[in-house]
Image (cartoon, rainbow, N blue to C red; front, side):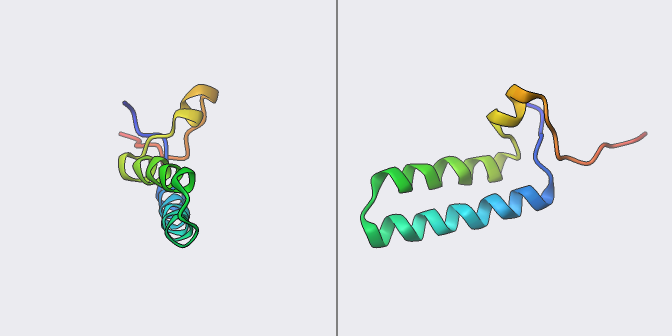
Length: 64
């Protein structure tokens, strides 16, 4: 699994995951909770399945 999410995208997804967890807690929503887990895992592993499908990457390129 090659990383395809940069630092800004990871932080943004982490904020969205925290929002979804809070929303799921207050609204007692399992759907929001599982959405939060999905987004949190994307931020944790720096990999997005949708980016992989369309061939996009926001990771900086390492030039050697």
